[in-house]
Amino acid sequence: RKEVEQDPGPFNVPEGATVAFNCTYSNSASQSFFWYRQDCRKEPKLLMSVYSSGNEDGRFTAQLNRASQYISLLIRDSKLSDSATYLCVVNIPPGSSASKIIFGSGTRLSIRP
Amino acid sequence: EPEVTQTPSHQVTQMGQEVILRCVPISNHLYFYWYRQILGQKVEFLVSFYNNEISEKSEIFDDQFSVERPDGSNFTLKIRSTKLEDSAMYFCASSEWGQVNQPQHFGDGTRLSIL
Image (cartoon, rainbow over all chains, first blue to last red; front, side, top):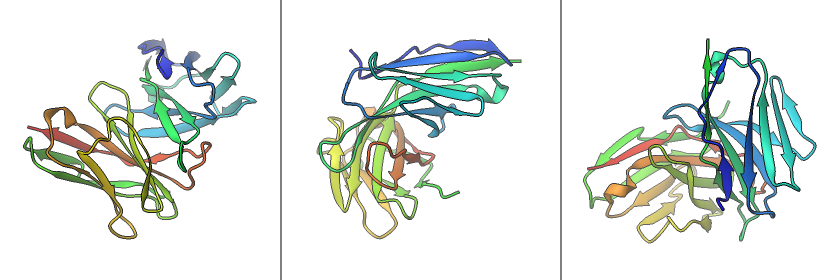
């Protein structure tokens, strides 16, 4: 089983739609979770951290289910500028002083006018 | 907003040559990282660095690779005797602390092309 697994998509949705992505992780010791977005041939950019209680940032809502080892990202009222690849990122406790970060392969989202 | 900066943006090198990729992390950050992303594939962790030492490294980070912080601002990745399969985007990242809840901030990458 992959350490971090995502549906690669692509998701092709109209502007204004609501879209949700899931991500599963295999290491039950994983402690921190993030969503990054990556535009084509650009660097990953932090979208939001994911907290146990779930958290919201504007149109974006992230949820964590530790029992089932998955996290989700919900985008409401999608904009053309939301078109990107969304990367699920899991942080595993370190063997030494720094944590180890594992990226999923990403889910591609395309918003059409 | 402070940024991680990387140079060069694109490096073209003959197979077998050595290449050094440079990064300037965010100034108050203490932990530094290198990742690579082969075209069309996922971002892969290479190495983390703290207090002038490697903290963690992946299976990819073999004897061909080395990292260094030669002065107070730069963080470098050296690849000796490059191979065709080293062609990829290389991203540097930094975080203020090394705890698992600390997000990492990425530079915009160096595209390495091995001919």
